[in-house]
Length: 224
View 1 (cartoon, rainbow, N blue to C red):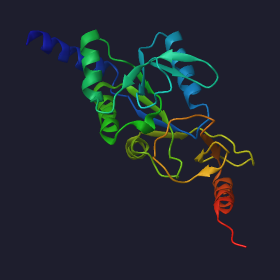
View 2: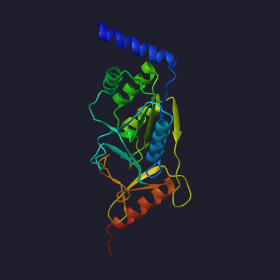
View 3: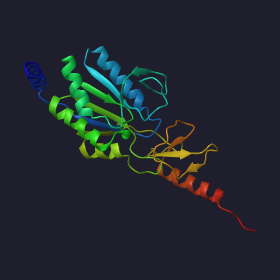
View 4: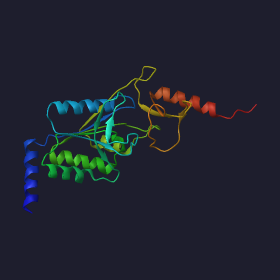
């Protein structure tokens, strides 16, 4: 009982010293917009400044066998996995109490794969401990529909920033279009299908529409 009381006092004292100024950030962009590179650069800056931080990533992205966040340009950093049924509030609270250190920042990659309840749990970490939580991820899937995690982040985040990238036509990309082995647009299938440049291409809305029309016309049976 005494030990738990000390931990509670520690948590309160740490939060008070930070003036509970933590925020929940959502930084979104299409595939290939350098979201992960920005996260890793931010982690490096925190490390250089001696700040306490933690990198996390949903395990659903299984392209990496090791628990790392890796960008397309080759830089990487160790991270903690987030499992689908994980209670992030309980997990992070236990970490803080075990180490007697409250993180200044938590950086989360592929945050679109978080559940609604996990986003709620992260918001509670921000409010209770003053930790800044920055979530990087996609806004929508290949059908232009919001992911569950992204929708909740739009609803709860204190700060929302778009990481912009450019379509081949010069317009801003907003669609993460799924393609088949021949490069044709795919319009049906499961919402989550992990892949890179071999399965997805970032497009503006007009190019996405035009390529869907083109793909549909090629698949139409023609009668003589």
